[in-house]
Amino acid sequence: MPRMTRVTELYFDFLCPYAWRGVELAAVLKDEGEAFTLRHYSLVEGNHEGNAKELTWRVTEQPLNEGSAYQQGSLRAFLASHAAARQGEAAHWEFTLALFRAHHERKEPLTDGTIHAAAQEAGLNLDAFAQALADEATRRADLRADLDAAREVGVFGTPTFVLPTGEAAYYRFETLTREPAQAREWWTLYRTVLTSEAGIGTIKRAKNRPPHRA
Amino acid sequence: MPRMTRVTELYFDFLCPYAWRGVELAAVLKDEGEAFTLRHYSLVEGNHEGNAKELTWRVTEQPLNEGSAYQQGSLRAFLASHAAARQGEAAHWEFTLALFRAHHERKEPLTDGTIHAAAQEAGLNLDAFAQALADEATRRADLRADLDAAREVGVFGTPTFVLPTGEAAYYRFETLTREPAQAREWWTLYRTVLTSEAGIGTIKRAKNRPPHRA
Image 1 (tube, chains in turn red, green):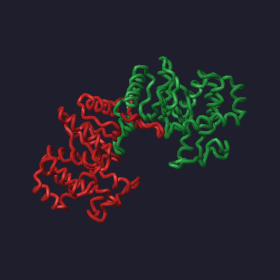
Image 2 (tube, chains in turn cyan, red):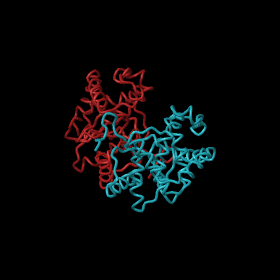
Image 3 (cartoon, chains in turn brown, cyan):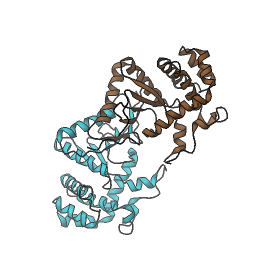
Image 4 (cartoon, one colour):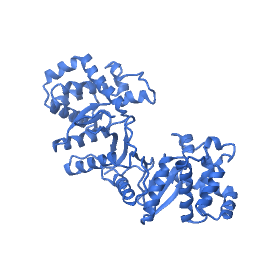
């Protein structure tokens, strides 16, 4: 039986533009009273995993500096995200949105500079943020716990939502919305698919028929 | 721009239990006035193709006998399906349903015997059916035309529906229905996903959270 949770978990990777849209959608719904928890999933680690049963490459075991070109800054961003989370849930959401917007709306790379600016924009206590980041071993352990939980669910892409009832699926959509009625409609549609008696496993667009980009 | 068609095209492979459920769904909706056309897509050919741009292995170029173990009878079934289609659309649907049910409901292999029994069950003119099957080169050409059309759409799995508006997607669900209200509901849900302004590309269940099988 899937583990029951009170809130919907949202697995994301800062690298992914679809995850960005998912986080923006959840942020709108959160303001409307729906409960979401931010969780991390590493696309780079997932690509290494493939169909193997055992993990042989862990993003949490990579160096922050030399490895950064290959990881495209994702490890740095994940550790910063966990450092931001130390300042409470609201701060974590502000930081996550700020960093996603910097990277995907303004096309800034996931560097220390971009992360610092996002922390500032999110109104974090910058000293406490720096201190939490400096405790790198603990942040790596925080991240490892998220990534192991994602493996248990079988997350393979982002955004993936895990509903309180245990249903879980990747939800890829093209259009960014910050409009409550639209966000509610798209969320209801997704949940209807997951809970339909049809037992829907996949709806996936044919390769040469991409959806219209609104 | 996607090509416009008056009816919904339904791509299927007799090998696939999800395609079976899709054909049963369409058969119910057809009785309710929705228009569908049966089209073929070869999973075995698709597996050979992978991500290659050019087709190097064509199911339509394989021998019927020696190759049959590897193709699991799919070529034989496809050619029979095209032979049945020569007797009109209603006959083609009857044959397709009969062969799907023999293979997936009664677990019979896709052999000449099973195909002959399905033709009988569908009320085909058996002499005309045998004659159409004997014109193997033409049936292979019929099939090739379907498979080339599927490539143009970018079909990668079955069932895939191509809506009259050009939207196309794989629709995988676990539960068989022959109940009109339920069939209508599941079809409306699928079309809502495809036509949503969200621009939904994929909803796909996490690997360790299969949908409930009703």
